Image (cartoon, rainbow, N blue to C red; front, side):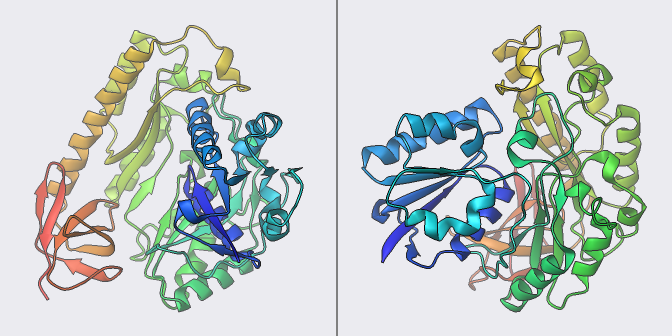
Length: 415
């Protein structure tokens, strides 16, 4: 039986999509050893031009070994045609073709099968190779049109997965021993808008399934925190960490970025959620065109007021085909990087203070062992290093006594 290796770039949604493809294989064996693969499926990311470069570089490396390459993922839409014409890939497949992967891998001639941007998979994922937690893609696509973002054009408009199918998948994964569930998608806060439901209602139903211990959520837009979501804020099964996408804290910059959030309302929301004891993360872009020194200073001063503990920050990278790509004036790369370092240092300090001021028992799912120490994440989405004589990999442990250091938490697990 021929062997296939999956190389996954990008977000948690791509991790799920890879598992969908794995689940639909019949004539091929999955290998974790790239060098032994007869074919490599590249589940690509195209969120920035840099992401495209990374995918292209990887494909060039595979080509040097003479291994057949199939391009999947978001990059299939943005760069698939060029890579196919240049004979860098044997085939290109769109998102809607994941469940057809077995027949596509059997193709004897080169192909481009893009499908559509309207469908949702019906495959039930029952396992995740090498993962201690389970990922659930609850929706696909996005109705927002932020000026810097290409994703709606390669994932389509927002559409929600059938609620009963999601629940069936949770039951199967819980039966197979998974206790932590990560809800993912392109824009999960939009879940249910096309089905007379909501993210809050879905999460409540998931929590009632036997074996579900913790539910973790992907990124949500601030304006998507509604009454049904507020109802679950005190529930013990909801991870005490929420990621709310700000992208910026200057009103002028939010307008340029075509964002729907408002700085004043965002700050009020963050303070409300912080009052419930939540660790709070966000996304932030530095160096977007138009970010003058004056606007940056204003944004940084405002960001200091937010009760943040985590940040996914990145320097603006031009994405061809988006409105931001032609905006002026551009910000010098070194300036954007300096601003990035400033906000990362700010939030790292805030995270340390949060851990110092919240000395509560930590509920840990141990995910890996590295350099002789076990590594896990607590309910606040903070990493902890654990010394233990017993093998506690993939176990849930409660840690009462631990050291809070600037770089992270440390503990000795007593049997």
